[in-house]
Amino acid sequence: MSIMSKNKLYWILQVGGWGLVGLVMLLFAHIYDVQISTPILLKRITIVFFAGIITTHALRGVIKWSGWMLLPVEKALPRLIIAVLFTSILFSVLILGSIEVFNLSTESKQNISFFQKVLGSTIDNGLFIFPWLMIYYFYHYYNKSRRQQLDTLKLESLVKELELKTIKAHINPHFIFNSLNSIRALVDENPQRARKAVTELSNILRSSMQTEKMETVPLEKELHIIKDYLALENMRFEDRLKVEYDIDEDTLDQPVPPMMLQTLVENAIKHGISQQINGGVIKVISDFKGDYHELVVQNTGQLNGSVNTEGFGIPSTTNRLNLLYGDKASFAIKQINGSLVEAKVLIPVEIH
Image (cartoon, rainbow, N blue to C red):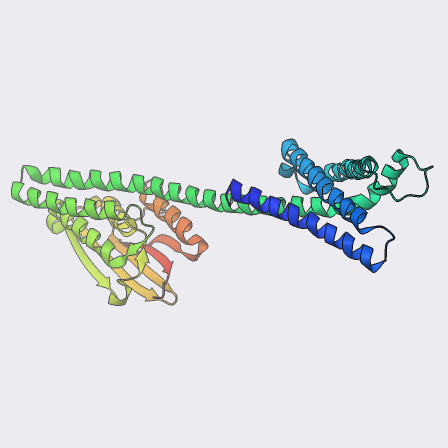
């Protein structure tokens, strides 16, 4: 809501609220048959109306100027009670003073001082001021809390987005560097194949740029990138690299974090195939396992007793899964036999 709209609402409520107080006074005078002439009664109601607007508007200014709305309730409440007391006194002074000035008094006793009248009416008038203040304060307190919650959610979302972008910023240069090395190795040996590789790399980079702002992409799109990447790597490893796919077609439309599977394949080549004199096999598997979409990358190689997390692939995969799915997704890498390493990702199935 804009500032102008808020001010308009405030004045509508001010005029409406104190107008309602005037109607209640008129109603009570009629019910209890108060012995006062109608002109004087209407003038008194008018005085109460304007005195109420003036004093509560002044109270609003004090609250805004003092910054009490920013304080916790337990610290603001004592200040507000004191403010109610002083506002009630001011309210009484304005009303009684106006009654005296305009000669609207109906008191038969002349031995009551003005000061005594003010003290006597302050408590009664506080019954008007206190509810006004509570409504005003808690209305703004609720709005402030709501804004803080929205700001917190926006901030958390922004942090999450920045973290994902940071991770992706690491993925893309890492991937480009390795792909360019593959092409560079072919430039002298097979220029024609190198030119074809440049085209393939352009296709991969185009897909990578298109998915940069996406949290997830269909598995089918991710597989296109993997196949192009492995085609590039196959130029370098030749017969030393064999690729197998075991893909359930029903999983092709399942969402996966972009470039995640490619990162696992890249790591499998870097830490597995490239370390083997005779090369080895990369196998990419996609299947359903209960309520989860299971993605597996297997490669020839050994873990050497423990998982090496120094490379970017494993931490980035874990971080991205945590950011996107929390504890609903998992990632594990293990040796499944003497010569085969398996990296497995479990992601909750998205039902279309």
